[in-house]
Length: 541
Ligand SMILES: Cc1ncc(COP(=O)(O)O)c(C=O)c1O
Image 1: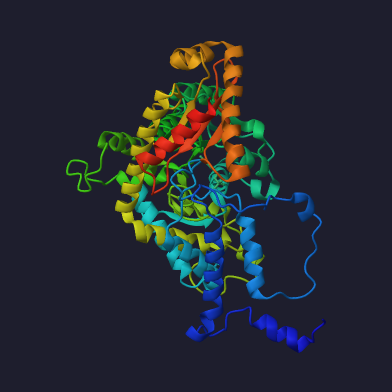
Image 2: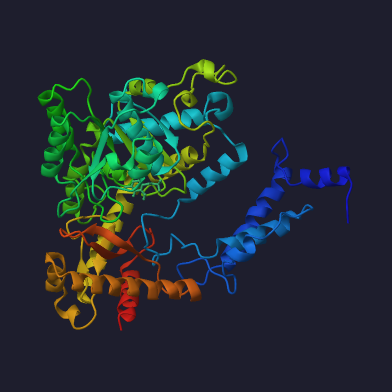
């Protein structure tokens, strides 16, 4: 039935909040949320994945669907939306351990909802209101956690950890190639990072026009931190050949193994290089600390008194000692949507010396319709034009709610659970690949009979050069992963964990496949770990 303009207008108006938010007018928003949550509740079966019978993803049919011609009732829209949530791991579930994706705190979920309602655009104050102040507050919190001088530092939210790496490298390039913003990049400059750095650095190299071949990857040591010896040797070689190094990117918390580069030594090396080669620029040091930043909550924890009675403090002190020099980086990336317990996307780029942002600022005359009022105009130097306030509000909510103590406890719990997991995995003949990396992540391999009874020496044979054995065991581990994954995806039962085809390469250049478990759920207990290991063990039969 075709309805008139007036009828449709009246109907669609009911789908918006009243411009004056009053209790009586909130009903439809509140009841819509309630209905969404009710539907969501029906999609859980006590297993680690949102799941409903007979709702397989159907890309074939989706690719042929048309937009509806007429309006729908709000009540019809929500169930249609909720069914698309099938197949997402339930991140808070204590047997969901695939990656660095924790559950979001309730306040941070509300933070996202508030941003959706008020829709701040934090490119400038006139559209972002006091959410701009909230962004400054988060920068202040993080600067002080890291150890930056808040009178000098600055920062802003951006599109993911990838965005933070892009900004870091961009600043480095600006320091080396004068005029490149106007004339383009007309010569090679190098960026250095470890072989186990995140691939988003390659994206940055590609998208900035630097070329991926100019990312120089340096071998990592046994503890998955960049080899300082190799880094120094390569940097000196490059500079002696007259090449320029725009940026060095230490990773503090590698994606798979939770390796932490020695930033203090890297900055000292950078300073030596500037002196020894009489450089007229200083290679920018950008810390990819999107995972590891949260460890800075231990920087000022009183380990002698240990007021929270944290268990395993030798592990925490070890981590504190690795993260405490993060302040030496010229800039750093912080992902709240990783160990910040905040929804996607919530990423902050912080810079030690705010004057450096002038290197990427645009002339105001290019943006004549903006920045006429207010005092906060980050849109002058951000890559993005519109920037959502959602990441800011959700990050701030988690920071307020958890405080340093909340993060300290969550991290400690994750590390404790990880230690238990590692012990149990060894009992089923598994080998821990990142034994030296204390943290929430475990990379491990399991072995079929007859190898599993002496798996440690089998692993040694693999990495010492038995390529056939390595490939066979790589395949075996991948099969174990696929078996468990298939069960959860097709029946909604089991556990959610993950696999990396190549956590790193052997000295002879072959991929080492690893199974991966990341213990971030605040709800996880030893019993859950027993169950996770049991599932893996069963898949090995
Ligand atoms: C070390 C590291 N850096 C950068 C990124 C990219 O972050 P995002 O996925 O938020 O873009 C990741 C993602 O896992 C990462 O592990």
